[in-house]
Image (cartoon, rainbow, N blue to C red; front, side, top):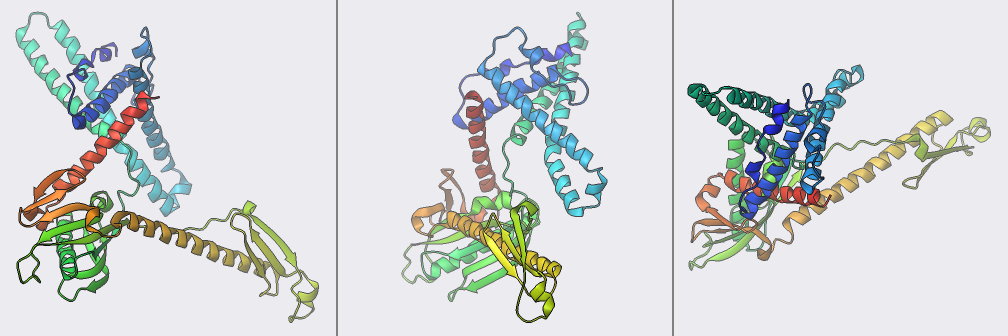
Length: 430
């Protein structure tokens, strides 16, 4: 539509904003111009995106380069969505439940972007029609007022959709949809640290209940004076890791402990580790990575093993694993056995790598549990929770009641801001 090119871009050239909103404004500006560019080349559905019609007759600019990047990303989502939709009809995929589930999940992750962009394109087309009607309405004041109201509504819809698309296009953590193992350990502070670990557990139990998650204790070690030395739980539900990952770290508490007889304030800590569930280990052996030779087994077993090459000498080149198998009386059986032994060893190696990765992730989250490594401080005297990553305070009682959604949302907002700043910087340097 020729009218699409009349959509307003000027709304983004405004006075400087605070850093947080500036990042979002920059990212949204990039998206708005990209969407206008995409709509200018829109034919049917989501096809035919191009920058030519928008850029014709204008010199290339940094802003235009960013537009092309955003259009490319939108096109990438559309292509991925179309390809995955086609694959869902493939008999080979239909007959493989695991592959079917994998493709369905991947398609679902692209669907929201594609559908949201479709809603924006529809609203953009309606806005162009409304502008044409407004231009043709002449002196009909009633008609012009009605169209003006419709245009205002459409612009509001498009603004909301642009904000949604901006967030949807940010890089995603591949672990966000996973269940987790939640580990809480008493840190420094003696008996009070164990009690505090128990208080944290109570908070997370309440929060999990409001989210509809399920908890299952995997391991626990209770403290002598109450609470826990350590406790590990499995937390299952929707988007568990995406929310609980912000709780990982050292939690410092300042209060008069129940074990304190002289009313002195103690500072204690507990550590929280949030580990996403690991994928099931699968071993794939490429035949090109294997060198297999045969030999005579020798020893007991009759003339067959002494005269026929029944032994198998198998070498796995990537790992250097060598297996010499003579247990069976036939070469075929020895080959099968050697392959099974190789699979077992590779499986153990991958499991060990997985365990090492989980251990490293836990250590990076909780550190040594010292008071100086805290992510939050819980101050009973001032009835506040101070999140040191955000430089913000929150009401203590709300945290104890399990109402931690505001804290988590604030962490997510900061993370989104950082991703938007990185995205804007990447495009400007492209």
